[in-house]
Image (cartoon, rainbow, N blue to C red; front, side):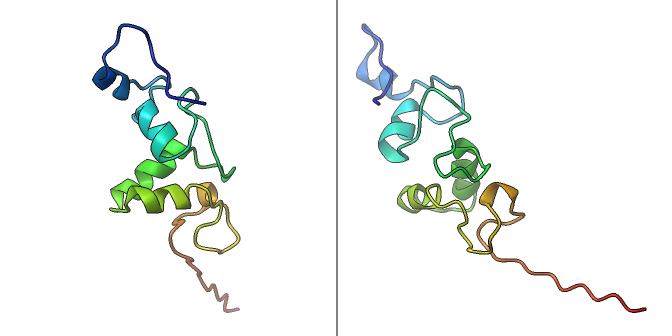
Length: 102
């Protein structure tokens, strides 16, 4: 799989192409995150968190690209047994104790 290119388009323009319209360029998806640039629903680790959503989530928290690349390949980043796409906070294992007094 490679970056989608078109004849007659400058290299700079090719770096800005976003085939699947997910706000990540094809170049970023292929070269930086090893994701699929033609389907915005790509989910490398099958955690119900589309790669583009997961990447944006980590970017918003100031996480660098190298770390993001590792995180999007792990379906349960915080190791709490809940896949990241279903987890209220995939970076932290949040446990809540509930006591019912009768």
